[in-house]
Amino acid sequence: MVSDTGGLLCLSRPLDQGFSVKLMFRAETGVVLGTAEMLIPISRTLQPFRFVAIEEDDRYRLNEAIQSFVQKTLLEQRSIVRDRPW
Image 1 (tube, one colour):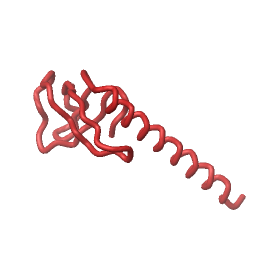
Image 2: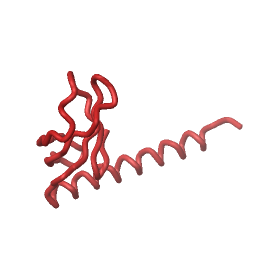
Image 3: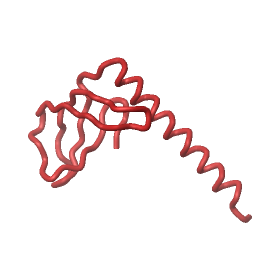
Image 4: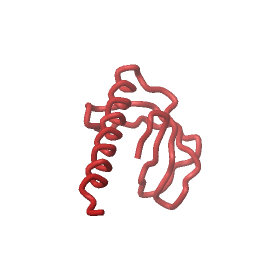
C-alpha cells in the first residue's frame, strides 16, 4: 500500500524506527524510487514508512499511478451500482 506521502510495507521482520531506506517499486506508470523513513511497526510483519526524499519524476509517476487507481476504482463502483438488481 502506498500514497504520495508514504505507505505500508510487509516485511519478514520490522526495521528500527527512524531507519532510512531506499525504496524502489514498479507502478503502473513505471518504476518509482525514493528514500523513506521507517515508522513504528504496527505488527510483526507490517511497518509504515514516510517518504523523506523523492525526485520530481518519481513523484509524478507515483501520483499518476495513484490517480489511475482511483479512476479505476470509481468506474468499478459505478458499474456495481448500475448493474445491481433493485
